[in-house]
Amino acid sequence: MSILIIIIAFLLLFFGILGAFLPVIPGPTLSFFGVLLISYLTDFTHITFDNLIYLAVIALLITFLDYWLQILSVKIFGGGKHSLIGVIVGLLFGLFIFPPFGVFLGPFFGAYLGALYETDFNFLSSLKIAFGAIVGFISGIIMKISYSIYAFWIALSYLMPSRFDSVI
Image (tube, rainbow, N blue to C red; front, side, top):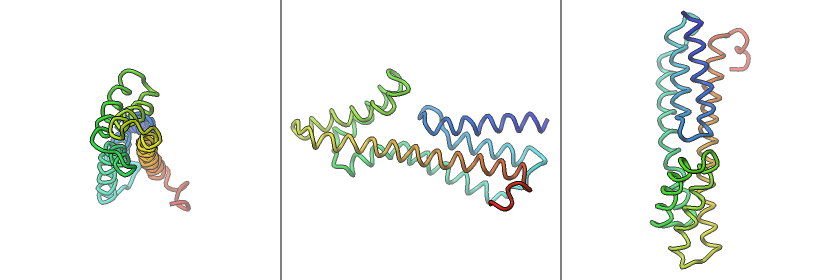
């Protein structure tokens, strides 16, 4: 039974890493559940409850920040209400109409079109605001991939503690 649980846990960890790039898949959440499965349903590990609480809080924080980072970065780069609406509409269109590239291009073009309306068709200013959507998207990917790889590393280190003791 432990082998089956480990296989399911590593599938969750794999999809967690994949979810770092695809916003439809909740990467940090899946990674956390992979570590949780290994920690409490197998005999191989010794992950403390405190460590699981820390991992859960970080996963929730990253998930929340990922959804808001594009919007916040557009605001930081000078976007207003129409740019923010453009990001949200662009993300929704991008997710469903042009996957997988639409996740990246949708918010960019949405922010650009919204910024064009706000800035009375100032193309350079609108491009700067749309660049903010890209910065937010890439920042979210970096956070999610870092967490997911760390969770994978934790799972490996607790399954094979003698191999990872000197590195942890």
